[in-house]
Length: 403
Image (cartoon, rainbow, N blue to C red; front, side):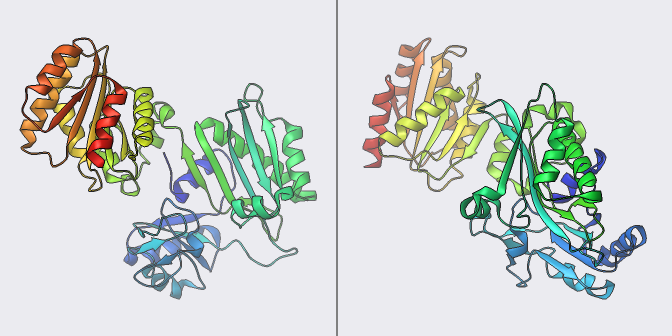
């Protein structure tokens, strides 16, 4: 589950990570009052207004309706309302939104932390994630903060450092000090960075995150180390341990079809192909997608209906698949182990009749308990449904239909 910047920062702060303070606004008329509250607590007189969407590159993105950037500095309280108005409610397009603008429902008004002082501010990159091949957590960091890490990796890979952390023993003090040393810090900034790294790793483990990315981590002009941004992904499978984090989910940022499928108990991921898939079991679903590809088609989705493929569940799956106008055929591939094939077949027939008319051909491959009876039910239904016994036979039917 992805979080907005302000949500990620709230988690970081709860674990003792120093952050750029801010207030969240969802109405233009509240902007000035909220900015004044921020000034009262931090003393800031300039304000960084940031669009809150699940995408990176907001500072370089453009709001379609106003031409504003997704991150804008308001130089004074008199500029706040105008700046917020240029972002809030608009559609922000960045390099990570696939050319489609995402509506900005909230903005974060943050304090200005690039104030003058004894030294120049410095920006670093830092992230914590799991290396599944090694079974260890990785702290990846660089002196080149504020830039796309992909660009840094491509052009100056020697400036990216990695620190492996064994989850059985946790982050050690010498590792945090090594990170601060590699970032070229000394004195107060060195000590602050070691504290920052330790708190960041504690947050990563404590909230069962899949990834924490802070870009940039800022060394201020008075040698404080703070998180100016945050990109956080939580492990969905661990949300049962964090009810408060689960409530942070923003469904407006997700594909509405995937949200609808999830609420119906279906495991669904939308893809860009032309053959809809309805399968029971994730492994079988992957194999089905592979054979569709090998037969000249492209899977339009991953959909696992689970072990109970009754008429109601099949009908809902049909409805979700058919929301995609690119779907030219639907392949149903069920292995009848827990559920009997004839029950699934009857579910397909009943769902088809309940929906009145399904505008694309359906190929049904049922194998397992009562597969013979299931095939007869399909063949005798008189509907635009083709039955198959072998997976290759089903794939050939897909190829024939798409030809």
